[in-house]
Amino acid sequence: MKALLSVRPGGPQTLELAEIPEPQPSAGELRVRVLACGINYPDVLIIEDKYQFKPPRPFAPGSEITGVVEAIGEGVSGWQVGDRLFALMRDGGGLAEQAVVPSDSAFRLLPGFDAVEGAALLFTYGTTIHALTDRGRLKPGNTLLVLGAAGGVGLAAVEIGKAMGARVVAAVSHARKAAAARKAGADEVMIYGKGPFDAAAARELAASFKAAVGPDGAHVIYDPVGGDYSEAALRAIAWEGNYLVVGFPAGIPRLPLNLALLKAANICGVFWGGFFARNPERHRRHVSQLLDWWAQGRIYPKIDQIYSLADGGMAIARLAERSVIGKVVVCP
Ligand SMILES: NC(=O)c1ccc[n+]([C@@H]2O[C@H](COP(=O)([O-])OP(=O)(O)OC[C@H]3O[C@@H](n4cnc5c(N)ncnc54)[C@H](OP(=O)(O)O)[C@@H]3O)[C@@H](O)[C@H]2O)c1
Image 1 (cartoon, protein in one colour):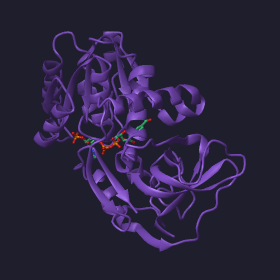
Image 2 (cartoon, helix red, strand yellow; image 1 turned 135 degrees about the vertical axis):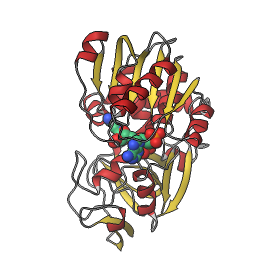
Image 3 (cartoon, helix red, strand yellow; image 1 turned 120 degrees about the vertical axis):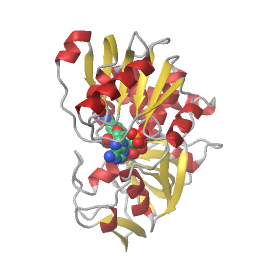
Image 4 (cartoon, helix red, strand yellow; image 1 turned 180 degrees about the vertical axis):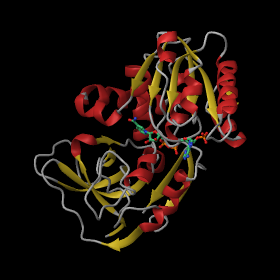
């Protein structure tokens, strides 16, 4: 079977399309024919050895897929050859024609749900429902500020924020992204510049966040961007607000903690992988809620572009260059 392999640390241009043996499922695993593989920002990091997990090389990146079950490992119950599923793989392996997934990380993809959209659901919406409910404790009527609001997790936060009854303020870097956030349901949209920012520009950015959220501030701030955006956003938080630390494509920021003191604010780390490993039952309830919302049309994975397996590196490069609206997906 064909796989797109990371053979040495480096950018998407270092990936190589190779013929490798068909993988065999061990106990507790399923082998699937991959229908689609969703690309997430961690794929940008993992091939450069900059992510928290470092799989041994060679490995295929891609950690969420939809697929059709082809072979069933020992001890697995509840699955049959031919079933469609969507699943996560912690150490990658999704950019391949076939993949092996732990059966306990797989969910049934019901008839009527599209396999490409299904490969763009779990990572972004799963992270976000956990972040907004368990960490942010978002309540109906709260103001939610979402940075990077047209990216993968960002658009998910706009939609889930609306589904939870919040007033959503979306912040993005471009007019096209602003239109996408508005279409996804954002109540207000602001466009910020591209950093890094000097002191005057940082003050201006903080003033823009404050103006966008309004005089009471944002009760919850969802930050999957980092860099110079974080401190400016934190200055717009409400009294006792929750600031969600989600990711850092713009760099890992250093925050002056007096800002947390002055607003009695909580700075909350979000680590979805750590959450679902410790709370598998709650994770399953989250996924079930996502499937209900998807069936009702309240959330809807947005596909920017579909790539072939050979062009999978281009899909990862699109995320690195900040140009994706929603998700890019690879179909082997
Ligand atoms: N904590 C967790 O458990 C968890 C789970 C999933 C993902 N994440 C993290 O969340 C972040 C976003 O992931 P994603 O898959 O949603 O990525 P994405 O689709 O690429 O979205 C990231 C957004 O960040 C903004 N951005 C600012 N500076 C950027 C830069 N230099 N390069 C690229 N984007 C930049 C962009 O929005 P604008 O152009 O509008 O600013 C972009 O849309 C990543 O850091 C990822 O590792 C964390």
